[in-house]
Image (tube, rainbow, N blue to C red; front, side, top):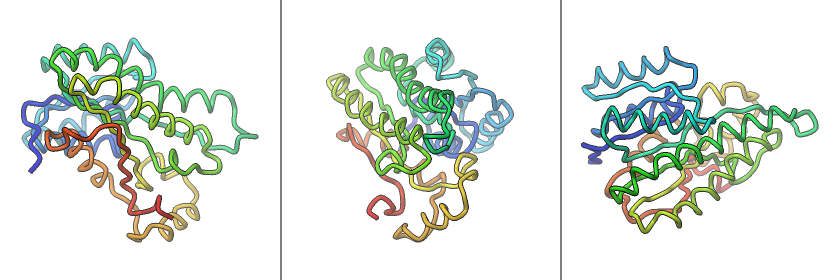
Length: 249
Protein backbone atom coordinates (compact mmCIF):
# COMPACT_ATOMS: atom_id res chain seq x y z
CA UNK A 1 0.00 0.00 0.00
CA UNK A 2 1.44 3.35 -1.07
CA UNK A 3 0.82 5.93 1.62
CA UNK A 4 1.18 9.57 0.65
CA UNK A 5 -0.66 10.92 3.68
CA UNK A 6 0.60 14.34 4.69
CA UNK A 7 2.21 14.95 1.31
CA UNK A 8 1.31 17.82 -1.01
CA UNK A 9 1.51 17.28 -4.77
CA UNK A 10 1.36 19.65 -7.73
CA UNK A 11 0.35 18.04 -11.02
CA UNK A 12 0.70 20.35 -13.99
CA UNK A 13 -1.75 20.00 -16.85
CA UNK A 14 -4.09 17.91 -14.73
CA UNK A 15 -7.52 18.98 -15.96
CA UNK A 16 -7.81 15.92 -18.23
CA UNK A 17 -6.16 12.77 -19.53
CA UNK A 18 -3.05 11.39 -17.88
CA UNK A 19 -2.66 14.44 -15.62
CA UNK A 20 -6.19 14.06 -14.26
CA UNK A 21 -5.60 10.36 -13.58
CA UNK A 22 -2.35 11.18 -11.77
CA UNK A 23 -4.05 13.80 -9.60
CA UNK A 24 -6.87 11.40 -8.67
CA UNK A 25 -4.58 8.47 -7.89
CA UNK A 26 -2.23 10.59 -5.76
CA UNK A 27 -5.25 11.85 -3.82
CA UNK A 28 -6.48 8.27 -3.37
CA UNK A 29 -3.12 7.45 -1.78
CA UNK A 30 -3.60 10.30 0.71
CA UNK A 31 -1.85 13.28 -0.88
CA UNK A 32 -3.34 16.74 -0.98
CA UNK A 33 -3.30 17.70 -4.64
CA UNK A 34 -3.09 20.94 -6.60
CA UNK A 35 -4.82 20.56 -9.95
CA UNK A 36 -3.23 22.91 -12.46
CA UNK A 37 -4.64 24.07 -15.78
CA UNK A 38 -3.97 26.83 -18.28
CA UNK A 39 -7.45 27.39 -19.72
CA UNK A 40 -9.54 24.33 -18.80
CA UNK A 41 -11.30 25.54 -15.66
CA UNK A 42 -14.31 23.28 -16.16
CA UNK A 43 -12.18 20.16 -16.54
CA UNK A 44 -10.04 21.07 -13.55
CA UNK A 45 -13.11 21.60 -11.39
CA UNK A 46 -14.47 18.21 -12.46
CA UNK A 47 -11.21 16.56 -11.34
CA UNK A 48 -11.37 18.41 -8.03
CA UNK A 49 -14.94 17.28 -7.52
CA UNK A 50 -13.99 13.67 -8.24
CA UNK A 51 -11.24 13.85 -5.64
CA UNK A 52 -13.59 15.45 -3.11
CA UNK A 53 -16.23 12.79 -3.75
CA UNK A 54 -13.60 10.14 -3.04
CA UNK A 55 -12.82 11.78 0.31
CA UNK A 56 -9.64 13.53 -0.79
CA UNK A 57 -8.50 17.13 -0.68
CA UNK A 58 -7.62 19.21 -3.71
CA UNK A 59 -7.40 22.77 -4.94
CA UNK A 60 -7.44 24.19 -8.46
CA UNK A 61 -4.80 26.75 -9.43
CA UNK A 62 -4.77 28.27 -12.89
CA UNK A 63 -1.31 28.96 -14.30
CA UNK A 64 0.40 28.84 -17.67
CA UNK A 65 3.48 26.97 -16.52
CA UNK A 66 5.31 27.70 -19.78
CA UNK A 67 5.68 31.19 -18.27
CA UNK A 68 8.19 31.43 -15.43
CA UNK A 69 6.20 33.95 -13.39
CA UNK A 70 3.09 31.77 -13.56
CA UNK A 71 5.06 28.70 -12.46
CA UNK A 72 6.45 30.62 -9.49
CA UNK A 73 2.96 31.76 -8.58
CA UNK A 74 1.68 28.19 -8.79
CA UNK A 75 4.22 27.03 -6.23
CA UNK A 76 3.74 30.06 -3.96
CA UNK A 77 -0.03 29.62 -3.93
CA UNK A 78 0.39 25.92 -3.17
CA UNK A 79 2.56 26.72 -0.18
CA UNK A 80 0.09 29.39 0.93
CA UNK A 81 -2.80 26.90 0.80
CA UNK A 82 -1.16 23.69 2.01
CA UNK A 83 2.02 24.89 3.72
CA UNK A 84 4.46 22.80 1.69
CA UNK A 85 5.31 21.09 -1.60
CA UNK A 86 6.50 17.49 -1.50
CA UNK A 87 5.77 16.20 -4.99
CA UNK A 88 5.95 17.90 -8.37
CA UNK A 89 4.66 16.10 -11.45
CA UNK A 90 5.62 17.90 -14.65
CA UNK A 91 2.89 16.62 -16.94
CA UNK A 92 1.82 19.68 -18.96
CA UNK A 93 2.19 18.95 -22.65
CA UNK A 94 0.98 19.61 -26.17
CA UNK A 95 1.60 18.48 -29.74
CA UNK A 96 1.85 20.27 -33.08
CA UNK A 97 2.66 17.35 -35.38
CA UNK A 98 4.04 18.05 -38.86
CA UNK A 99 6.90 16.92 -41.03
CA UNK A 100 9.75 19.36 -40.50
CA UNK A 101 9.44 20.76 -44.03
CA UNK A 102 5.87 21.80 -43.14
CA UNK A 103 6.51 22.79 -39.53
CA UNK A 104 6.27 26.46 -38.69
CA UNK A 105 8.61 28.08 -36.21
CA UNK A 106 5.61 28.64 -33.94
CA UNK A 107 4.85 24.89 -33.98
CA UNK A 108 8.37 24.20 -32.75
CA UNK A 109 8.43 26.95 -30.14
CA UNK A 110 5.10 26.24 -28.46
CA UNK A 111 5.83 22.52 -28.08
CA UNK A 112 9.27 23.16 -26.60
CA UNK A 113 7.90 25.82 -24.23
CA UNK A 114 4.94 23.75 -23.08
CA UNK A 115 6.64 20.37 -22.78
CA UNK A 116 10.19 21.26 -21.73
CA UNK A 117 10.52 24.85 -20.55
CA UNK A 118 7.54 24.38 -18.23
CA UNK A 119 9.42 21.59 -16.42
CA UNK A 120 12.38 23.91 -15.85
CA UNK A 121 10.05 26.68 -14.65
CA UNK A 122 8.19 24.51 -12.16
CA UNK A 123 11.20 22.59 -10.92
CA UNK A 124 13.17 25.78 -10.30
CA UNK A 125 10.26 27.16 -8.27
CA UNK A 126 9.51 23.95 -6.34
CA UNK A 127 13.08 22.99 -5.48
CA UNK A 128 13.55 25.88 -3.07
CA UNK A 129 10.88 24.73 -0.56
CA UNK A 130 11.95 21.12 -1.09
CA UNK A 131 15.58 21.94 -0.30
CA UNK A 132 14.57 23.74 2.88
CA UNK A 133 13.05 20.57 4.29
CA UNK A 134 15.61 18.31 2.57
CA UNK A 135 13.05 16.10 0.86
CA UNK A 136 11.10 16.01 -2.37
CA UNK A 137 9.99 14.08 -5.41
CA UNK A 138 10.04 15.44 -8.96
CA UNK A 139 8.53 13.25 -11.68
CA UNK A 140 8.68 14.32 -15.31
CA UNK A 141 6.30 12.81 -17.85
CA UNK A 142 8.30 12.17 -21.01
CA UNK A 143 7.35 9.71 -23.79
CA UNK A 144 8.59 6.69 -25.70
CA UNK A 145 8.78 9.14 -28.61
CA UNK A 146 11.58 10.88 -26.70
CA UNK A 147 13.43 7.56 -26.61
CA UNK A 148 12.80 6.28 -30.14
CA UNK A 149 11.69 9.28 -32.22
CA UNK A 150 8.69 9.46 -34.55
CA UNK A 151 8.34 10.87 -38.05
CA UNK A 152 6.28 14.03 -38.00
CA UNK A 153 7.00 14.69 -34.34
CA UNK A 154 10.48 16.17 -34.33
CA UNK A 155 9.36 19.01 -32.03
CA UNK A 156 7.57 16.66 -29.62
CA UNK A 157 10.43 14.13 -29.65
CA UNK A 158 12.98 16.87 -29.00
CA UNK A 159 10.99 18.19 -26.05
CA UNK A 160 10.53 14.75 -24.53
CA UNK A 161 14.15 13.73 -25.10
CA UNK A 162 15.14 17.02 -23.51
CA UNK A 163 13.10 16.08 -20.45
CA UNK A 164 15.15 12.92 -20.09
CA UNK A 165 18.44 14.84 -20.06
CA UNK A 166 16.89 17.40 -17.73
CA UNK A 167 15.79 14.62 -15.38
CA UNK A 168 19.21 13.02 -15.17
CA UNK A 169 21.08 16.30 -14.73
CA UNK A 170 18.70 17.64 -12.09
CA UNK A 171 18.85 14.35 -10.19
CA UNK A 172 22.61 14.82 -9.84
CA UNK A 173 22.19 18.42 -8.67
CA UNK A 174 19.66 17.84 -5.89
CA UNK A 175 20.32 14.28 -4.73
CA UNK A 176 22.37 15.46 -1.76
CA UNK A 177 19.25 17.18 -0.45
CA UNK A 178 17.22 13.95 -0.56
CA UNK A 179 15.25 15.10 -3.59
CA UNK A 180 14.72 12.44 -6.24
CA UNK A 181 14.07 13.24 -9.89
CA UNK A 182 12.74 10.58 -12.24
CA UNK A 183 10.87 10.37 -15.53
CA UNK A 184 8.10 8.17 -16.83
CA UNK A 185 7.85 7.43 -20.54
CA UNK A 186 4.30 6.43 -21.45
CA UNK A 187 3.55 4.47 -24.58
CA UNK A 188 0.38 5.07 -26.54
CA UNK A 189 -2.38 6.11 -24.14
CA UNK A 190 -5.75 7.34 -25.46
CA UNK A 191 -6.01 11.04 -24.54
CA UNK A 192 -7.01 14.26 -26.26
CA UNK A 193 -3.43 14.50 -27.56
CA UNK A 194 -3.26 11.00 -29.05
CA UNK A 195 -6.80 11.07 -30.41
CA UNK A 196 -5.62 13.28 -33.28
CA UNK A 197 -3.11 10.65 -34.46
CA UNK A 198 -3.94 8.66 -37.62
CA UNK A 199 -5.69 5.36 -36.92
CA UNK A 200 -3.04 3.41 -38.83
CA UNK A 201 -0.41 4.76 -36.42
CA UNK A 202 -2.49 3.61 -33.44
CA UNK A 203 -3.06 0.17 -35.01
CA UNK A 204 0.65 -0.15 -35.70
CA UNK A 205 1.46 0.72 -32.08
CA UNK A 206 -0.89 -1.98 -30.82
CA UNK A 207 0.65 -4.56 -33.16
CA UNK A 208 4.12 -3.64 -31.90
CA UNK A 209 3.17 -3.71 -28.22
CA UNK A 210 3.86 -7.11 -26.63
CA UNK A 211 0.90 -6.69 -24.27
CA UNK A 212 -1.31 -6.10 -27.31
CA UNK A 213 -3.23 -3.07 -26.10
CA UNK A 214 -3.07 0.65 -25.61
CA UNK A 215 -2.29 1.97 -22.16
CA UNK A 216 -4.73 3.56 -19.75
CA UNK A 217 -4.10 6.85 -17.91
CA UNK A 218 -4.20 4.92 -14.64
CA UNK A 219 -1.27 2.77 -15.80
CA UNK A 220 0.85 5.91 -15.77
CA UNK A 221 -0.72 7.29 -12.59
CA UNK A 222 0.15 4.30 -10.42
CA UNK A 223 3.76 4.42 -11.62
CA UNK A 224 3.86 8.08 -10.61
CA UNK A 225 2.43 7.23 -7.19
CA UNK A 226 5.19 4.67 -6.62
CA UNK A 227 7.97 7.08 -7.61
CA UNK A 228 6.40 9.70 -5.33
CA UNK A 229 6.39 7.34 -2.36
CA UNK A 230 8.88 6.70 0.42
CA UNK A 231 9.37 3.21 -1.03
CA UNK A 232 11.09 4.78 -4.07
CA UNK A 233 13.51 6.82 -1.98
CA UNK A 234 16.63 5.18 -3.48
CA UNK A 235 15.57 5.63 -7.11
CA UNK A 236 16.68 8.76 -8.94
CA UNK A 237 17.75 9.82 -12.41
CA UNK A 238 15.80 6.97 -14.00
CA UNK A 239 13.42 6.72 -16.94
CA UNK A 240 10.63 4.19 -16.44
CA UNK A 241 8.89 3.14 -19.65
CA UNK A 242 5.24 2.35 -19.02
CA UNK A 243 4.40 1.22 -22.51
CA UNK A 244 3.38 -2.43 -22.56
CA UNK A 245 6.82 -3.27 -23.94
CA UNK A 246 6.55 -1.05 -27.03
CA UNK A 247 10.02 0.43 -26.69
CA UNK A 248 11.57 -3.05 -26.88
CA UNK A 249 10.38 -3.32 -30.46
